[in-house]
Length: 410
Ligand code: ATP
Ligand code: MG
Image 1 (cartoon, helix red, strand yellow):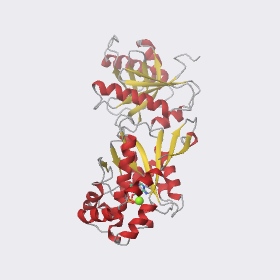
Image 2: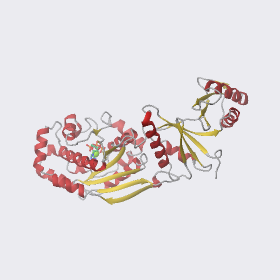
Image 3: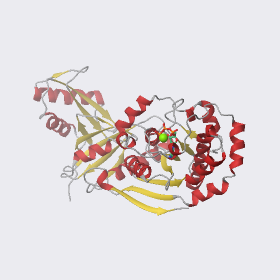
Image 4: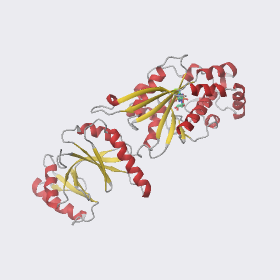
């Protein structure tokens, strides 16, 4: 049994905006749950809600750097700080603060106190002055309130006082799970993983759907999609990925409709299928990586033509981004290298040279009626395969802890 003192503490701060009333508790509980899941595989982790913050404690010998890496990816965290903790006693705080600063080299410093424990006998400015004087005496360094080399942060909570010198930024956003669920159309390309990431960041739980043309193509796009989902699962710990076969539908489109309309018809098929999966998943929205004007199917007119078949809002978080900006985000996320691996796209296989850029809705609807593809859509759903990716825990990297379970759905 390790004592409170000998455990390693990490103080976790989350965003306050929008976190009022009943939502606050939902937000905090989800954040606690997500931190526990992110730290799976580390021994004896404890996560607790305290006044206005959370604390994570780990045994003395647990790998702090692994915990730090993981927490940097937990949405909802604004910053966190590995901290020393002491009882709420001014003399103890002074001594502990000096223990924290003593190993550091500095000629100027300040003390920054936050007090959520309102019964502490001194107010924050008084604590700053008292502890500051003690540290000045021991360090011989100057107090500098505007540009100190070291800031000694004191956070006095009802339970204990936390002391640290470094705030490590978290990713911000909202804890995944507080913003309902969406179905994300995940190609094996560059854009859609970034779009999915941005929705996860807003607290949306994401279910993935990938359309493929197997057996007319190989399985490379599916393998790439799975690798992308493994990366995105670092943000939600458990993901479902549906593989939906599109080849039969595409064949009928090629056989019966003129080239200029085919891409739009494929995309209407995708949105219809994704919408039905969303129904099954109780998801409230769809997500795509579309960006206005990027390709012919992404003109505003064509977005209108393709969107109308979905009964849910289609979120397009990349609508206003340039390709270069999306690539930069994909690199930071770690998906870019997977996305540029070669694969035969289900669309490129059957794609015409000159797609219509301003298709008329009536014309597209008429061609769609001609296809009478309803049984094919149902058949595609019946042939859908389901994969679950779960972060089972690891004491080192994320990849070591990812588990894949396959099942067939329908
Ligand atoms: P990406 O880089 O995400 O593939 P893109 O620029 O290649 O995007 P499109 O191929 O027109 O653009 O696809 C637009 C969006 O449609 C994608 O971002 C994705 O959300 C969805 N999509 C395209 N192909 C597929 C697919 N095979 N499976 C699932 N979704 C797809
Ligand atoms: Mg694509």
